[in-house]
Image 1 (cartoon, one colour):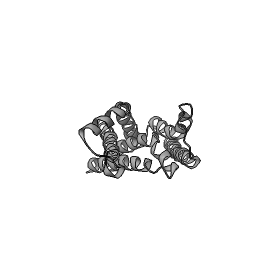
Image 2 (cartoon, rainbow, N blue to C red; image 1 turned 135 degrees about the vertical axis):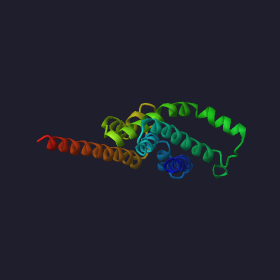
Image 3 (cartoon, rainbow, N blue to C red; image 1 turned 90 degrees about the vertical axis):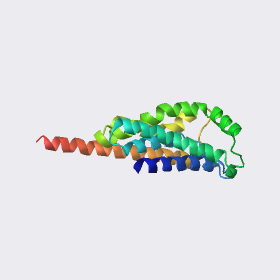
Image 4 (cartoon, rainbow, N blue to C red; image 1 turned 135 degrees about the horizontal axis):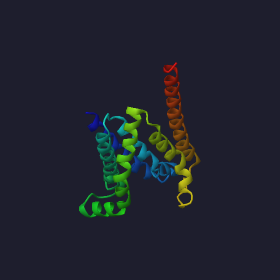
Length: 183
């Protein structure tokens, strides 16, 4: 049940991401749509639902591809004034080939990070996930794809800082409990 729900949420996430990008009259929505780090958080959260690493990795790639399918279906839907056909599907897959290849690695990896966080409170992967949110705006500048909306930029960084603060707080609390247990 959790798996089916996670896949459905992921597909809706992908469709919503594409839909936001279609609002050219609100450029900040397009900026939100172009963010990459939330896709990594999606896989991380999927991994957080799983007690076993293998299942987490499989759900991570499943959710990543469910989101990409949702994104593609919205891209090729009448909502976007497009028509779903074999030719448009082929063109979409070719145009997003790098994203599909990247998802093979990022989906399972970030889901594994989430599973490790859930089961062992392994902080490394959680910090990498938070850092992706915090650093994406900086990484995009040299590529010529800077986030135009300062609100979107600040919101993404703020979410990353909140996540990082949560991880550090959890680790400090765990360290404190471990130290108190040894006395």
